[in-house]
Image (cartoon, rainbow, N blue to C red):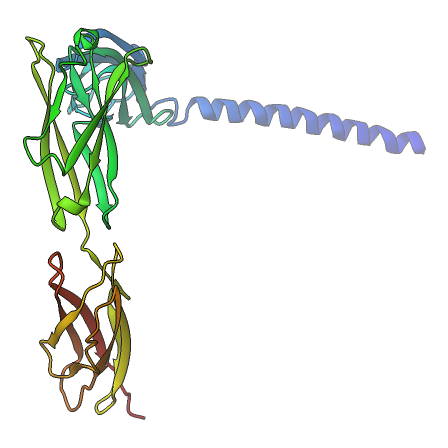
Length: 354
């Protein structure tokens, strides 16, 4: 009786194993007939293109060759260049199975030097690899050049001198006589000063120029100062560079914007603002005025000091205005900031009826 029970169990297990094997085979056959196998396939001739040595400023044109190794039409949806100065042209019409095509890339190299790489990203209807890329590598030489061409000082404040650097680079850098190298801006010498550092033994070799800008001789606001480097070499006698940045005003307002919040008619609101100089110099407030009658000053300090507190009073009274966006103008005896605007904001409180 025991053996009579065991034999059916063995036969059942064997039947299940055969069934699983048959199912596996069916799944494989199903995959072979699926849309994945019948789709278009983008096959690149190469995923890496070595352009070799070129002179900086050359425009390089290269071709990316591909083939449709699938069984359906291949559609190039988009081609993107990752990096600077890249233009691409690719087939807009479908590519038949077994046929090939060319993607043309144009690379601008002006202002670049050394080893450079660009990546070309190709998007297609290839269901297996819809996104593929090609890396383009090159080595660019330059007789002489400046990096960066635009030296950004940023937004800064106060009277402490600010320093930045730019490099003179190129294959003819060793021909420059440092004693005859002239860095100048053709403007007042007290505003800019230059220090030259010989780094031609470094890798990559360069001549670094340290620029020191003295804000004490600069008016507040955005500045753009062209300067030049005179090299005395025949083919590139002069190299130019632009210094840009923004000098903030000499005064600091704390808080920078005075927010009264929500107001109701008849309510009187007070806010205190501190006006001071970054350089710590003393000044006197000669007057305060506002474009709106509802804003006033509690009292105007008469003493000379490096910092003053002002109490601004907001009295909206009866008004139909939903918001106030105004300012208080403070007049001082300082030559570099005779008028300072203090922004003021207020919003009407909305009272909902029950």
